[in-house]
Image (spheres, rainbow, N blue to C red):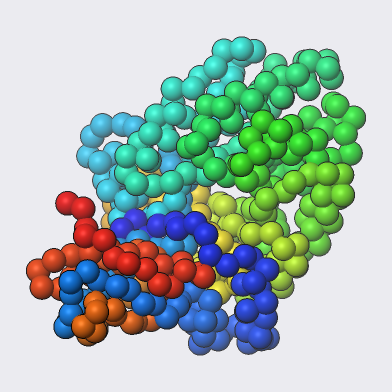
Length: 404
């Protein structure tokens, strides 16, 4: 989205956790969460504007924090009014994306050696054209519905060979394009690959993938974590780390029915996961329920909880339009593109409450100081416009003339 975007760099997760340690108070009402967000997600900025002094208007045009969604290839790549509206909505309200299904192994290689690369590559290309960076989902999916039928008939040696070939193929295909992948989806809930290969866990997959793509970050990703107890997930991650897995991040899916979990439960589980010292991403958020008022209130509450926690590095929902959503009740926009109450709350957060706008006075040397949310800003002075970006640990910048 434009008030939205990802800027790499800044403080380490450990530094952020230490900096925010005093903010982990028991109170989790909206005022408390707002105070946490104010301390964690904003900075005191200084920008130097070339040959500018006097009054300057500024507005954040792109978030540093990823507020994303999954995208559906059938509508993203289509023609027609719904597809056009889908793409406009994606650009207006999101700054990160993940492919809903076309990058999964069974869809990219439905038969041994027959690669279907055009659809996932076209999805990436379209998002790239729209200015939306992507994360990858997923290299493997070891629960019962994840593997292709042909995977299930392979002898162990042939299965391992096929898995390594899959990792090599998809990581080479998206080298330099996707820097972060869910490695083996939902492995806490079953892994037919590990079972067939006689492995205790998926640590070997991380070793294979890191050998192929050492600069890529590989996440675990699972469900029923924030709505349950994160302890088994933490134990599973630590077991794989003990076996040599270089795990780069923790994904929590967050598909909820009949409302989001209690705030205390969500926060407690985020604390448990945060103790791993790894970045956390909410990878697949939605709330399926018919009570639209509660759905909206819980969407607001859940986003604030996650945005307030120092270990959380992004929130992606699993679709936004009822016309192409795996759980249509969970969408933000109805099939006719009228916005639902949960969509109104989401839009209010990411385009109003968590956006900084204002005016200030630049000094004679062009320096302007102000406080705001981390992100990219547009500065307007004397009929000219400039841009500069700020991120945690990078609060000073020199502005550049805005490109047409």
